[in-house]
Image (cartoon, rainbow, N blue to C red; front, side):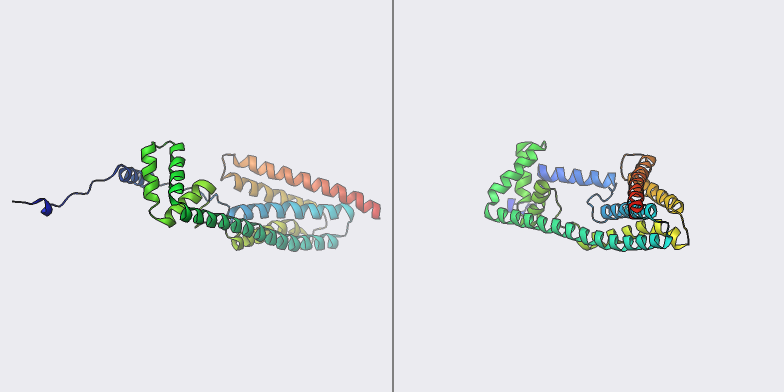
Length: 257
């Protein structure tokens, strides 16, 4: 005879566990990855390279418009490279660091709210899931289970309310380093012909336009735009900036002379 106390009850999965298991299996089956869109290093790197190309070529063009001294143009280009790279790195570091500090302050505020009013935060989380399309009963159960772990529910609240991942905030040092290197590389291209002994703007123009096209084409590989569209857009921006500063340099140079 078998008593009830001797029986081994099988574990019955709740509806929430079944949903989680099916979702995990589906994610594993799909198995695709997304590119990094959080802006940790890609945004400052792309922006730095593009800005280095455009700004330093525009500077060189402006000086060329005002003087025929190739040594003066070379000096201006090298000075623009150094000043721009350090300025970009410093600005990027301060910007990203300030953004991260603001995010940390908001995360700490959310942590205190969860500790002070856990039931209210659980209800708020359930309402978020209802708004996303879950049935109220399931939404309440999901919120209840998530709220059992203070750290996990904090991550959920931060993602849902602030659109942030507390464990993946952008690095100010990485952004600054990426910005410095990319700007320096971009700004070096227009200077290379003068380092090699060029005395006219045309070689610098060709290298700059090529660099701008490649930079624009690379960026659009991460977007729905065609590569040639991004490349031509960058070229157009560089041509306009160079033409305007060349005209300005010619105007100022003639006035000084």
